[in-house]
Image (cartoon, rainbow, N blue to C red; front, top):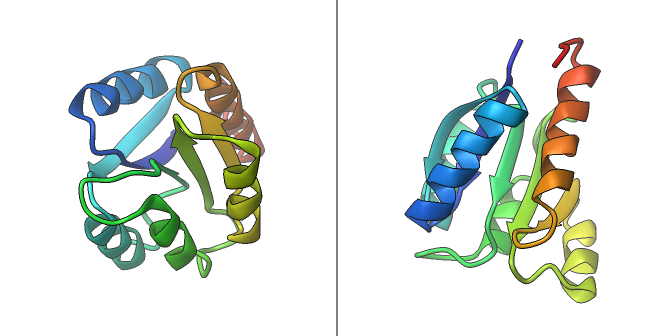
Length: 129
């Protein structure tokens, strides 16, 4: 079974590259995407059984990735949420930890760690890569 991922990212180029990378290297299914906080909240909350992992950018066309992360605190324990940002400093990581975020990855230096995270989630669900 493929890992079902929803992406909240406002850069079309990053979204396309990330989607292709996740499909190819993490054997994931991207079930949807958007570029705003409101759209992300609405989709994630109205599709509670349709995603396993949400990948959220910090700065969005409208709203904040942090506010979206805070809104996802009531998700199922099996559902994971991560921040994927160019601003993944120690302060932001601590703030995300307080919001219950499962991981924070730097876009420019930690894409391999994000892929490893996805593969570990798949293995935890009984899938093999």
